[in-house]
Image 1: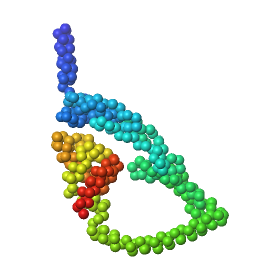
Image 2: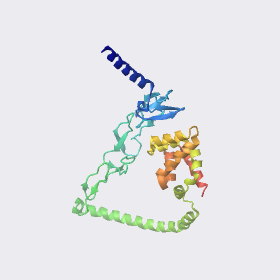
Image 3: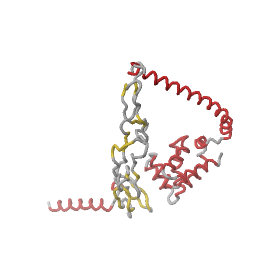
Length: 301
């Protein structure tokens, strides 16, 4: 019996030691990233990297995002993203849920304002229609404007006040329309030839951005660099595994890493790749790089 107990204890000890000296990727709950030839564990959402690991498949030093910043996904970034502000002038937004280390601020429209967004994220809200003339049929919500009664349903038809105001407004609109039509005809005649020349000579910038980015990927990759290209790819939901593969497939060659990731990103954007790339660079504060990319594409016109 004593011998059996000894054998069981030895087997358990062997298994524990084997596990301790044989680290595996299972130690890295949120996956790994490459740094100085080592595979380091990613920091969890809500954290950032303070120090990279010194041994394979180990965590370096992670710390919570500072107040005013967040990281919504596991990462290997040394800086967290800035929290969205709901207090921009004239945007008519207010805070719905505060920013946390692992989640960005959630904004919503102020009272009596609405916005329509395909993504569910509102950046600008508009005042709700008050239906002064005909009364409210369906109230305003934060995602839809007020629906007013038809003229026959509204209370204004009960008196002359609404008809007088309507007549005045109709007269003013008629004068404005006449002026706009006359001015528009004049401008159309003056500008028609210029627009035709621009279309013929291919000077429409957006058109160039839509069709000419392909031949210039190498030059554009040189301008952007790895870190801005990686940030753009992460914002547009390119997977971490895809990004890491570009890094690992070309170790030490940041130019080729950037080019391969740019090709993958361009394929995900389709015909809008050029236009979207300019917008991403500008909104991330890389205006000078955006202008360089624009210059590269302009030189082909």
